[in-house]
Image 1 (tube, rainbow, N blue to C red):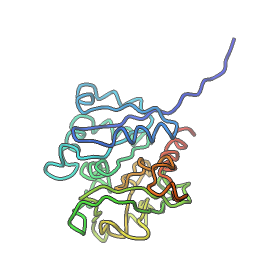
Image 2: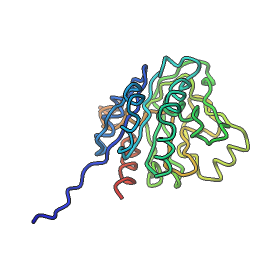
Image 3: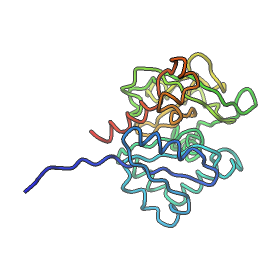
Image 4: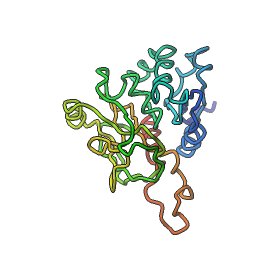
Length: 249
């Protein structure tokens, strides 16, 4: 009798809303990291919220959910909270990794998952007052965050947002720093004026990460605009590989 155990790849549920446009990109990134992604539209989630219960990783994709009506990520946050808020809370309690990218970060902040239930943080309009799309560099700074704890190399990837300036109270910022919840910081320039050069933060458990830049758009070398000159920088793939490392242990 063959008792060999077949190890299956981790799975991810990619949560999408009308206006989400990075779900294909992040699904490709997950596949490169060894994850089997499934995309769920809000209609799927509302009709059957238990769809996400078996996912090892939850991803809130970037884009312009509901056209950013009433503020970036606001309606998506309300929809998710109403349809599956308890399930997301349960996933976090079970220490299943959650990542929200760009609009997904804004959604997690609107839901009060990041920076915390006190809702003392916000993502405001860029300091420049305009939408900004360019490549940036960020450095991993948190050992608590399961998405960054083993990363040693800076990540280069694009931003594409108009409301990416992370703001918070002095007391909450001090708490984030003290609790090792500042997961990623901009280096060589702050593109939106975020306090403390914050590019991404994690929750107190370390399993939830929200960030504004798009690591899913630098998971193969050719995606870097200067790859043909031999320049690529650190790839965002490493971030997703950390999520896989965590769920695979």
